[in-house]
Image (cartoon, rainbow, N blue to C red):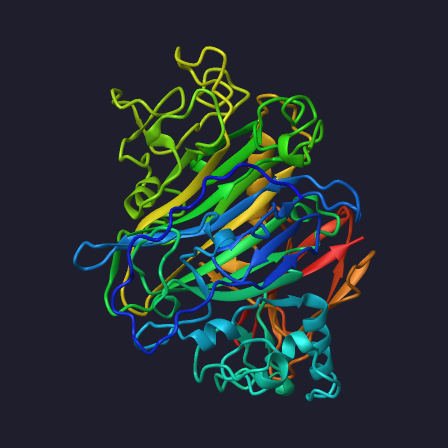
Length: 581
């Protein structure tokens, strides 16, 4: 088992007030599931920490055959959320490594819609992740479309899907869902607001494989063991998903994470920030470098030298290094919370902190792992843990400088004139920055949520192979991020995510020279159809249609994945994917 030195979390110091005496607090989550439909294997917890198994690394790319040494790109990650209540009191929920020793700020399950509390019973019931594969959904849709009824057995993942008032939940999950609780999204065929899979309803899950789960920071009055902070009473509904990436290297090496954050408290949460905390080791944890591209809303992670490991292709603690084949990892914020001015606050700062248990000389005290709620919040707002502003050059910590930065290391490592970890541009580090085990934060904010309001944030995690180390040019990773973003934009319009229309089919899929779009709904017809490439280029369009069938010719298009958009006579805009082989 791989291991490495970690800073132990402090024991809880304060109790959360207003705990109901008759209420038993929630226990820590224990359920895990794996996203593994493409070249990535990502371990997920039924809580706010992920990409680890609570003792070992859990984000692997590429996937390798069983029994072969498996390097990990990320050791662990977690979701941070913090802000101020109406009395300017700080409320926080963050996760790093505390769950390994039974200290957490997040617990499984939804919160009560009226008072924002959890129950131990629901925490136990929702200690799981729901995994769905697109072929199961496609088969279910086809079963209904052939004669208007479901004839065969409903696949168990669809039967158990936690859609609102699912009457099959007890059979599929072993418990009834909370009455009228909005949970996992679904296609509601008869429009009655309830998920009824035996009547043809099905999950609205993105990607070729998806996992959905829900967690909260109230925990039925449980102590915030990671930060010692007061609960926000936030509920988070999470999707992790990926595409198989047929003939597309970008999707083959990318996974997506969508977090819907709901304020279930009875008061506003203001000056709020949400952060993705990461310990991205790229194999060995002693040669971590990283940087940011603020204008692209992206952070990136790479190795210090061409041969991953210290020394050579080795790493203490039995950690498996990448050696000469390490990737560059990119995390792009595809969608973030909106500020009061309506601006997307998806990437407001990029900060980091140092593990005090490794490194010579010891890191400066103001740059180390946080211990108290205000220290977590300082990192989230683009400062060091002691409140010092990040400054340009060196390691970014210079209290005497007025050259303030919000984004650490925003330069391209291949450019010696820009500030990167490869080129620290400081006389204090003439031979480069010292080797530390570093952790990073992709921060988004500030924003405000009124009681019952929600916001969401979506990340794409991309792995690019083939960059020349050391000091790689991250331009190909930026281009990869742009292609992934264009892919996502092709599935949305004006910010609204569009689901596949169950009455529209394309076959054969994959196609060779010709395929056919068919609209089965006899009440409507296709008015407009557009065909797009992966990078969002319009390839062909058809207007003024009045048909339910349309032939698509391949022409000279290369093999790969493509998208179509259809405007039907009922005003519905739908999308779908097709593959040319």
